[in-house]
Length: 359
Image (cartoon, rainbow, N blue to C red; front, side, top):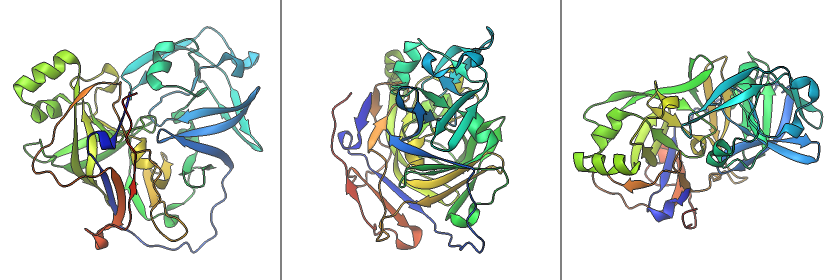
């Protein structure tokens, strides 16, 4: 289920502090490069398949890589009968899969070898929830073995060996907190429905196409009245709102946020997640080893911001919702504007998005 920003007169304004630096050394050379496509804000990697091109979703939240198509699995990779459970935090579901051996995925001269992935062919429940028009998911194993650079504008994904220093090429560097092999962004802020400032522990999940989700009983309790909670819980609905949020050198004004009425079992232990639509407007590097997220805003040849995200609001498990605002409304339009803090509040440019009915 997908909702356009203009359906709710909700806009996204993104600001960032520019930290200028110039690389004194040669640009590091990647060990592999793959073409990508941004679909529903998410990064899809293109590979050569037995019957033509295939795509895999890139997902920092997936603990294992996933294969939906048995034709991609060579006989030697089928292995034994070992099975394992995988969680999909963005949709609140789990699935059992058959453990695989090594599966090679290539495009041109570049190859990625998936190790110990899972085959869950035939699980239509998960595939439908993911809206999976792809052959599988490349999960945390890619980030455990490489530093991953994603350039949505040039439609390229570069892999570097751990320890490669890329920070000088990027304007913003933000810390990641690794919990096992899962990346988190932790920040302290006071949202409009909160009584006081609190620390947010948010999983960085590039498999979720939206912006920000709160799976927290505390946030739901503070964001709703007793009557609202009874109604929303009974209907399994959430709250869609907009708020100003900042962490590190990133500032988000009127960012659409979904607050769930219940916490999926797969999402316990975290306040929520930060999704792909926040990442899609930046050339960015995800470095599990160095525990860093590096970003540079996308611009065109004239230096004007380039919009990559599709302008839609996604609920994590196709939930319906109540739209609710806290405090005075600022005139909001279905646009996204990027600007530096030095230039606020005058925006540099904007791009309107069209409306869409519910899917």
